[in-house]
Length: 362
Ligand code: KG4
Ligand code: ZN
Image (cartoon, rainbow, N blue to C red; front, side, top):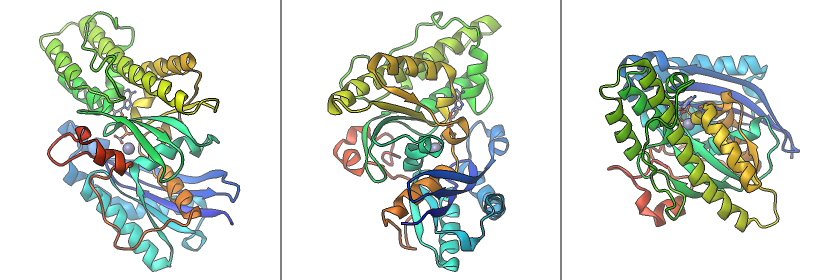
């Protein structure tokens, strides 16, 4: 087998991203370029991502972003082994832009297409800069997802738990909004929480001690919004932000620790590795709490650098490269999927995971 050089395209939310990643025949990974154009400023006036605006913005910038990724990598179309594009889950208008672009490029250049599940990209993101062998336990915490996964390789992720309502980042964002902070709320709330008293506001501890590895943040969200109403003093607001951050980190750690115990049982005697990925992994209180959990349960702690925690195309290119190395490619009629469980068997057999009208995003 020779080395593989993949163009990755990511357009499933509010980042237009393209990257070139090379995977050596020994499995070693090199990110040759990773370009990310964020639309945060375009969505900020609305307090959240507006799907229509996101899709239009992707279609305007995708060509330029891909050109930059190739130029920065020093790789022409002829130097590519394949094109990997996110095919879901996500905001489908945006997904269609990136996937269609990927299909057109693959067709025009005679390259194989790999339709990548965005969650599989996150699942592999820690391997972009660190040689973390499979398998590992992954906590994926972003604005759209909150899942515990056992990652054994591409196409071999087993979902252990997911949120039954909001994702952790969504909880940060919604609570921040109810406190009058800007979008995205997570970083703003973390900043406000600095020096605050995390024990000042007792907030609900959902699912504590409950069987399984699912998460729930809606009770916390309601309680925090109620506490926020009428708070005007700076100290009060700081203490509430610290209490919210503490409560979210606590639940993430408590549910993760249950999963760690089960994972350790199942991998008796093997190396125990834990990875946290997704935008919420940027939060220092969350990281600290998870590092403590690793220490208590004998796991090594890994987190990709922040640029690979949040949405990026390097992780999509890597998932594409690992798939291509296994001979897994997709036809040009591959669908764009707003909802696409990474572990279809678990999603189908456990319908309690399906929130909302349209079924589980993940
Ligand atoms: O992974 P990501 O960039 O996009 C999704 O795939 O959703 O994650 C974005 C989420 C947002 O909800 C944002 O508020 C949250 O990650 N986030 C944070 C922090 N930085 C980003 N949450 C808490 N503390 C942070 N420092
Ligand atoms: Zn994501």
